[in-house]
Length: 292
Length: 344
Image (tube, rainbow over all chains, first blue to last red; front, side, top):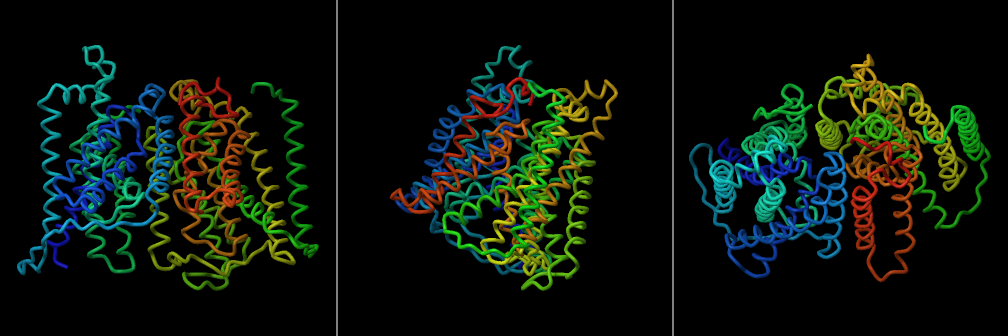
């Protein structure tokens, strides 16, 4: 397989991890805990792929927007019920509650949708090239990679050019100071829940188009998302993006180039990278200040 | 603390040691006697779930001393469980369908398994115990995933099939009696470990651990070498959890990646949190509740008009919901002491 092909696969994997990692890291920064149930938010998006594309026969782009809206809504409702009343109890209790919530939601999906795996075909067309060792790229790859870059641009604009985004960054850096400056941190947290849930929906939708849709679709990715977010520097949206692509490239290149006995170790190596980064630079790639 | 005065503790300690010894001896007696009464199906199911409850109890007790008492978020108990299990299995196995085996005597294999677990505990402890709590969770979780990835994917570890051909040292005259003997022996070991955990929790050493949980800087300022205390907690935990893995291999005659999934970690943590982190009794009882639900579903399924997988999903939903509700409304758990849960 040519290098270009590996790069395309890496960009594809990195893109949907990146979208989710940004949402994950926003929650980490503003609401201040590791949300293990985030994968279950992504699963909602994945099911929306199946519903909109397979059952309703809508084009993928339209489905993507529906997934975004539906997941934003449902994610916010779930968070409102579970996490908002817990605000202030600390990082560890909320982390534990998210484990329980994840378990509840996963099995709830299992109960209503059954355990079977559903495949979605968005009718992508494929373009093959014979240059540079030969590679192919499909409209699906383009959809995923373009979505990630558009979202990156939107998040950048949100965080730097809007009141709501600047308030998010302020709250993420120092909540007390933000409140003292008149920022309504409660509303900021609500905004973060909605944005993060929407991102989970988009990421889940894109995963649904590439791999498959099942009650475990999001759960299967949560460790990679977490690794990307922490690698990038917990709380930093930019770091999460870079972290996601690093992890994705580690995975695709080990799968493509290492001898077959160890080529399945891509995810394992990604976690190794995460641990090494945490040890030599606990603040992550983006050098986020970490309270001890 | 609370109601237990030192003298009562001492007596309770002795009682526990005797109870443990009696249980182990009972187990050995069942093994040697060769009696083979017919046991009905339901009892066998109870025993099977019971054995895993006891193995996981050997994980929940150290995790409770690490998290509940000392505030260290070890999110990878299954890592040490796996190291102990795989090291013992590979060294002791006399021939596995897949994977590298050495056919060495089993006590040596257990020893190496525990030593390896301790070394990994030391390595992880020295490198990561200075990180903040939730990062420690991430590193231990990632380490467990790395170990899982290696044994599943790298040749020599037996892949998805795992390592078989491990000597079953608890073999009794007949199949059901083996399980009965194992239940007694494991119960005895759990009682020993419980006594140890209680010792640690209520000793001066344990008070320093609780102080570290409450405020590490203040403890350090009082002249306690907190880092060394934390490392020791990791090492003690590694010994017990590694041993639990060894016992799994020697009871089951095989280990495979299926025994060391993330689910085990989650189960252990949920059990501890439901029962009450910080209380050794609470942690074990909480685990019993979660495993009891598992048992209940096995039997109750017939009475409900749903399929087995639907019923399992329903049970896990209940467990998840229970965890959320308990964290929300009674963060100290059912048997925990609310006054002790001031920080975390």
